[in-house]
Amino acid sequence: MSSYVILQCGNKKCNFRFPAEKENFNIYCPFCGERLEVLEYTLDTGYAQYKRNPHLHLECILDNVRSSYNVGAIFRSASAFSIDHLDLCGFTPTPDQAKVLKTSLGAEKQVSWSYERNALSLIQQKKTERSCSIYSIEASLTATSLLNAMGKRSAQHILLVFGNEIFGVDPEIRRLSDAVLQIPITGDKKSLNVSTAFAIAVFYFSMFHQ
Image (cartoon, rainbow, N blue to C red):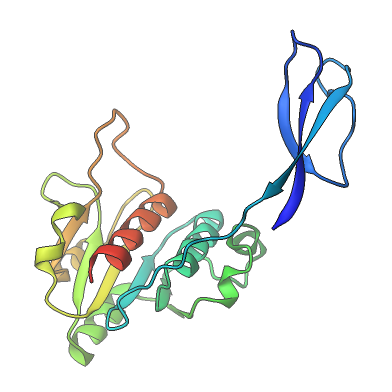
């Protein structure tokens, strides 16, 4: 538990309200200059503990994901949902780059990862080494809803593939996949940022594939 303050402008026409660190704030409103009212609160940063299926091995491949910031955000989600391994492939940036570290917030130290130049070769190798269910996460007219993926799993080792932000998953990787899965979208915008799609997909598999 830690303390913080909520600051609210005393000028009723302005009425600006925002949080700040307890020991570091200005007592005057940044918009109108009136004095701020200070309200102290205790910040509850705890999380309830959830357990993932210990027999489920969840591995993810990032194939030619171009944005360093997306990769950093993916590392953060991978840590949050206890992903067993991240394979960074092609020109996907690695944690050796400062821009990745800016959004990973230290998660790169908590997640097992490796780099490979060719994602297709890597997947072909993994298919010969062990029994695994391979899913490409991709929006397309022929894709299966992520919500219907549970019945398709044939192994405890799951490999999720996320492709390039513009071109998507490599067609040959899609062909090798047990299924192409898409996140159901009901709004006008028919695409998601790859880091957002990653978080949704790994949450689904880590929580519901028990």
